[in-house]
Image (cartoon, rainbow over all chains, first blue to last red; front, side):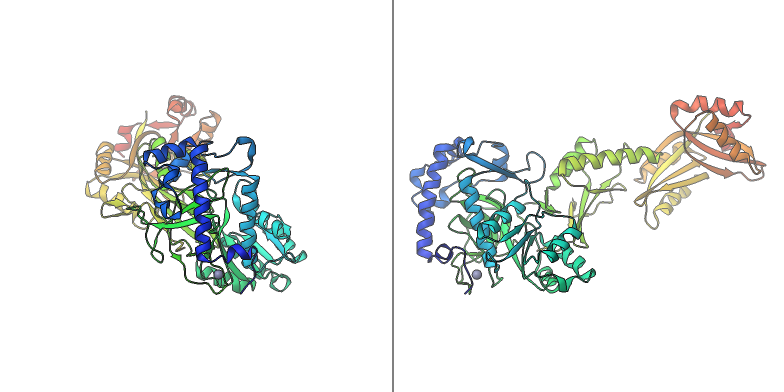
Length: 433
Length: 145
Ligand SMILES: [Zn+2]
């Protein structure tokens, strides 16, 4: 048995946990009904009132929430507290309509910090540790989330943020950082740089917490070997708080969901019916304790399996498998959410037919993002400068829409691969799932 | 005074160019001059042919992307310095040259050059060339080469 940050909660027997979830759910439903007209309308449309929700067994009666709801209610439509009680916001990247803006009261921040402190403890950290937080700080939840957890736990926290690899390695060696928090691709990149520079003997890392993007067991083995550490996964969504919704323990066999704060369900994404544990489906979360931005039955679109088997670490929280794909077509490229439909929108706006193909790969631990676009008579010219001008214009419009740079390649008409008459829009060579 | 040129989009892959020239050859179209400019992804094939309208039709029917534009064809003596003379005349006249390529006709003492200038600059360019004693050739002349 390992160490716990909050032993009582993390090892709460199943019946007590269920009772706690029921009590919190009833309160939360009442809260959103009273404070959020958007929720009230959605519940009324489904013929549900707070009186119908007497416990967790009634959860299925509540309507689902999706990213569309967040867009419709943007920016303040889902705020469930007074604006003056909000102390912070976080946001995902992407343009309006795809971007998520979430609100936090001080209590929300405290509970989120607790969740991250649990994750750090499960990875072997305590107040004697030096935690290098190499996630980006700012609107992104990664940096400030782990920073909050590390500070709460009493660790020496190094808020170095992402980038500047030389400085990362220098701080890591000089300060003798023992825990590294960043994206798995950046961890792999750092591991490579450290080995190339022959610094492997100089680092004192013992563990790393790596999340915010998909990674494989092979990647874990590689990072663990190159850095001589244990590498732990962590899961979260800005919609729910950020990293720390679920975290891995020493068993490294799935991530324990902080069930005192979140109820997890798995549904069939087509029929929207709840399906049993150990079957693959879409992960749905209900936040039980969030004050500012509580989401009920939020569809993550992440495909996943829940496992209620007893874990060797002693935690009773259900474990979720690493996400195994998406039930929508969203891609995460260099940490940014990309929907193919956004590319279609740009092409149509630029007066081009929406014939495109996205090719994503991972080279030297960095995602590459290429878009093939079929050349048209309108875009074509005998003058290279005119084509370059239009190509540059298209790339700028794509950057504005997507938030990251894609490399555009002009290809001959009708050359984009079609399978059964349908164009193949995405080729993801990263094999992340 | 302009000559019609056909430009065709070709992908940078083995056989990309041959597909175009084969299609034109099968349609009995004679290529008088040719140049290619390319990036890492694609190329622009520029051609002077004996029947530009037919060539454009053949290209479009074959699913190629093409465009017909006006270019200047100028002639100089087939000896050192004659191309330099053409270019310096255009430079002196501040005529922006987007691209140029040379070609040679059989049994002639003249060297020819295709020059692409801005459509609005065309008349001015012709004037400068003529003022500098350079022969500008018209469509018919080129076809008869
Ligand atoms: Zn465990």
